[in-house]
Length: 254
Ligand code: ADP
Image (cartoon, rainbow, N blue to C red; front, side, top):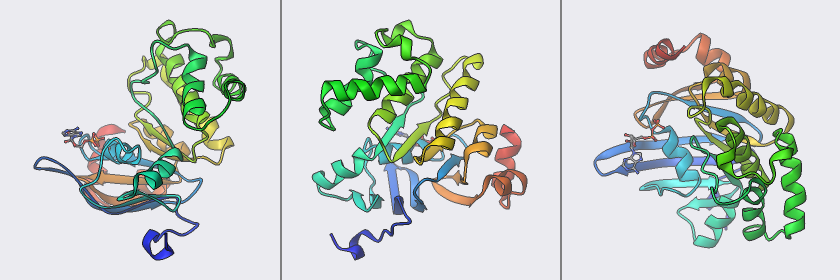
């Protein structure tokens, strides 16, 4: 693979070049270009339907772009031979709005399944790592519970630990608190603030929690109709946005 083909530099971990995604007649992402540097925390904001979740789903290879290229850490994700796509994909973990835990497995097994199957760790190695992570998220004593025996906030903590168990370079967070009862939201956001502060993991985050976005983000990207219409540090975007559409959006959500 030549450097010319990838176009990435050591300063770029995620790179979208001219990405277009359509669902039927609906152009959801429109010639989108953006990049994220390693270790940065980037928040995607914008009205519902502006394409934010689709970006995360493309990175998880749950969707394919119609046009353009996506690269992760110098590996092509799209278009790419399957082997290279798998390598790129391994670097990425995602936490979903609805937790998406394996309901028939214990909490511990939820964390060990993919590291054993995909990364080739031994069961013992995977369990040691899983227990460390459950300790980190405050659930060391719930290894043997099934997801349905946990509160929504606890399930989301397990989902965060499960994503980290794959040692991803990139953590994708898709409105991870929007399915939670209000009293459980703060605990999950505090955990994510800790992870942002204490690890070098790169985060790409879709959220309606603007205070959280302000706290953790190095950069905020404002989307409208499948394009980035404005981007910058949170203090600029939230306090002094340039685009009328950004002002309208923030006026409605803040
Ligand atoms: P956001 O996260 O900004 O709310 P999404 O990326 O979820 O936006 O969705 C963008 C648009 O794509 C919406 O109009 C949505 O209805 C449409 N869309 C998303 N997924 C699909 C799908 N699998 N099939 C058809 N349309 C979809």
